[in-house]
Amino acid sequence: MARGERMSPVDTTWLRMDRPNNPMVIVGVIKLAGPVDPVELEHLLAERLLAYRRFGQKAVPRAGGMWWVDDRHFDITRHIHHVRLPGAGGDAELEHFVGELAATPLDHGIPLWQYHIVEGFQGGAAVVVRIHHAIGDGIALIGVMLSLTDDLHGLDEPAAHWTGKADHDHWWSSLFAPLAQAVEVGTKLSGRVLKKSNALISRPAKALGLVKDGASVVSELAGLLFMSNDSKTPLKGVPHGVKKVAWADPLPLSEVKAVAHALDCSVNDVLMSCVAGAINAYLAAEGKKTRGVEVRALIPVNLRAPGRHAELGNEFGIVTLVLPVGIDDPLARLAEVRKRMDDLKKSYQAGVTYGLLAVLGYAPKVAQDALFWLLLSRATAVMTNVPGPQMPMKIAGAEISQLMFWVPQSGDIGIGVSILSYNGNVQFGLITDAAMVPEPRRIIGEFAPQFERLLLTVLMHHADGDDTSEAPKRRTATRHRERDTQAAARSATRKRPPSRRKTAARDG
Image (cartoon, rainbow, N blue to C red; front, side, top):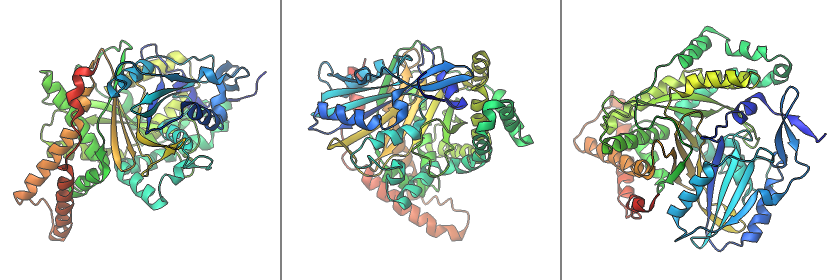
């Protein structure tokens, strides 16, 4: 019998979540500026990926659960492919190609990953990455991507070297500050699950005991299972399995930080508010009612302990954020987003959902499906926010010009929003099922205008002398925020590339 190791219960849960119309596969794109030697790139990718034993293993059912087992007939040609795009071979063609791959399940008879090298893309190359969620979550797979780079290959923990430690800590805290306490509280519960993982293998009932630990946790669990439906919109429905992907021109991270500082909120608050505004604009353009509309998003929260970012597997919980799409005023919408994110700081949701994922890995699949239907039927989207390196990186000597990924959707969810930072920019990605949103560019094309609208609104409030500070001691801070906002405005009014919304007619 081939060597192997037992799959963790949480990874087992994600493995069994595959659906014909929603494969549980994380898709990414790495754009490389030319020149690129495709053969050298293939050899480098193979060598560096196979340094992870998991990429040479397949998922096999055995007594007692699922196992990762070495593939004795491993063939790299099944996993790395070379393609050329038809037509102009630009972004529209790449988006179409990625959408087709996102809708295609991986072969479970071999290791669950696949890379496509798109040769000659815009004078360089693009690498389309497909990795099953059972292998790892977003944080783990960003670490895998970065281990492929010339800059970080061979380091024990690439994530620790994304930037200088102080910069990385600052970026992490600024992006995830609204969820920091939820992570801290959730980690207390999920950490107990992790510490007792060996006991859970033989006594899975203990996991249920951990989930039920304390009145607050029981209340949180009840709230998750019996939460109300969000608003009925064209974004909800039954997915057909035809995927569409799109990405927007990146926003300068410095501008987003400046606006967040000016409004005394987090970067994440600003970004989530822009997502809500973009959905509002899309629904309005479709002639749909927006007043009072609320859209629930499932947001993964990293629960890894410090120093474990390079490990594969899934170590995250999920929190539910109801986006106030129906609030048209950008400042009022941002204030409500911030309030709701503040409420999540006190939440046990991340830890409770992590515990549930562990329990469901042992439960019959029918029980898993029934429980997740309760959760997923009440949500419209999955949203992921992952920090990347704030310096330019290279693979095979070619600089990474753009880095993107798309999260898979569970159950009947047909919308996935991905936010990723890289080299001083914030990148938005959107994946949709064509049954709900046939043209995702019509939503994602609104992200930047929504940010600029928020920026303009802030400037107008300051110009009118609307000082919302609550005490004299905050006036200095307010002046500093005004200065930062004005600096962001000057930066935002620099000449930018033509909006890719004008190319929407090319999509299809």
